[in-house]
Every structure is written in C-alpha cells, then in structure tokens.
Amino acid sequence: MNQQVHNKLVSFIWSIADDCLRDVYVRGKYRDVILPMVVLRRLDALLEPTKDAVMEELSFQRDDAGFTEWDENGLKEASGYVFYNTSKWTLQKLHDTATNSQQILQANFEDYLNGFSPNVKEIIDKFKLRSQVRHMAAKDVLLDVLEKFTSSYINVTPFEKEDPEGRKLPALTNLGMGYVFEELIRKFNEENNEEAGEHFTPREVIDLMTHIIFDPIKDNLPPVMTIYDPACGSGGMLTESQNFIKDEKGIIKASGDVYLYGKEINDETYAICKSDMMIKGE
Image (cartoon, rainbow, N blue to C red; front, side, top):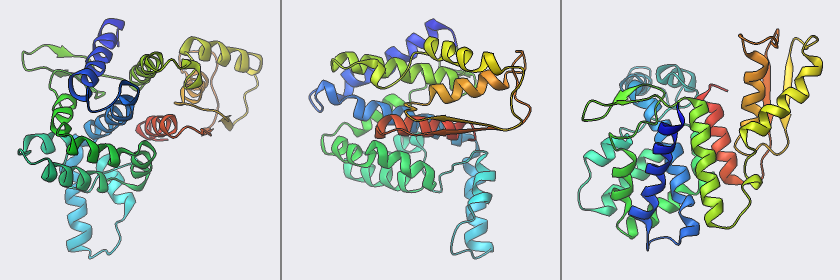
C-alpha cells in the first residue's frame, strides 16, 4: 500500500469524526467511536464473502443436526477465519435496510454485535462499543456513521476493489491496516496532547529492535520460538518479530513454529492487537 493511498484512507476516516460526531462528542472522545468502528468494519468486510456459507452451516447445526450449542469449529471453517458472525446482518445490510427509526437501527445493530464469536465479543466489550452505539442512536447519528464506514469509495479489505466510477481501490494488507491504526492513534493523541509512544512504538524503532534481538542468534535459532511482549500495545512488535523470523526471502528463518504472547493494560490497544492477531489466524 503506497503512502498516498494510505494517507487518503486515514484522511477519509479522520473526516468521519468531524462530519458525523461534532457536537455529539467532544473532540477528545472521537477515538471512542472511530477506532472500534474501523476494527468492526475490517472484520465485517473479511466475513462478507463467506456470510452465506456461515448461515448454511448454522442452519445445518440448528435444524438438521439439532445442536443446542454451536460447533465453533464448523462455523470457523465456514467463515475461513478464527472468528464468525451468526446474525443475519452485515454492516452493509444494516445500512441498506435502515429506516428513519434510530431505535430499530440500534436494535438491529446490537443483534449484529451479539452474533459475533466470543473472541470478537471480547474486543467489542473492551472498546465499550455497545454503549457508543446506544449514544449515537440517541443523538441520531448512528446511520450517518454507518453510511460513512460502508462507503463504496473506501476499501478496508485485503482484496482489490473498484469504486462506483470504476477506479481501482488497492487492497489493504494487515501491515497497511497497522499503519492506518498507528496514524489514527497518533492524530488522536495529538488532539489530546498525549504522547504517541504511550500507545505504540513506530515501525522504524520496531525494525531496529528486531535486528538487535535476533541478529546475534540468527545462526542458532531454536526449533520452537516463543515471543513475549509485556507491554504489547497494538501488537506491532509481535507482528514484526514474527515476520522478521519467518521471512522466506531473508537469511533469518525459524525452523519450527513461532508462538506469540502479549500483555496490555489499555483496553483499547489490547482490542486492536487482538483483532489484528485474529485476522492473521493467530
């Protein structure tokens, strides 16, 4: 993802706050909506192509097999990820079927959130997204925010798309998503006069750290490696360390599995980290 496209996406997401949240939230609280909605839209977009397969699997388990508890493995296999959603809704469907009733939209949105697998529900809870949905519905801006995040002029999927005018929208890789989060966090921190380093470490610093850590042992890597970050933030160090070790084009390569562990006290950055790891199948 080139820098120009990256900046355009960040600017579009950043503009949502001023377009939809002004006078509903103080500027310091914009991030409480924007960051979880970016995560939610990313997860939602990944699940869209396999939505029918998940619903078919759910129907089989409920109607044909008579399961009283869902078989998560079957639902994960149907979705193609380690997470899934069993509601009939997607963000696009919520937007397309919305009426002027914010109460109905709120109820449908909450039904959609309740349909996620437990690992995504934890992310939703860490972001306190349900309370934000209720607040936006009460202030009559929930549909406006939903319209922005489902716009056909932005692409937060790992697949190349076209906008309504036929212009190509580049795919957003996991690395590119990480850059988007970091830039948004940096901008929000500047608005709140906070230090960006409290929430994430710049990728250039992470790259230097991985070389310092792994260059001395590059010829003697153990067959199984465990990487632990006791203050993992949004997970950049864990991700880059794994990529560095397992890079098939480089001279450093682990001969076996690499296991990632992280600890983070801030709920918001923990949720970002967990969502990023789940998207990668971790």
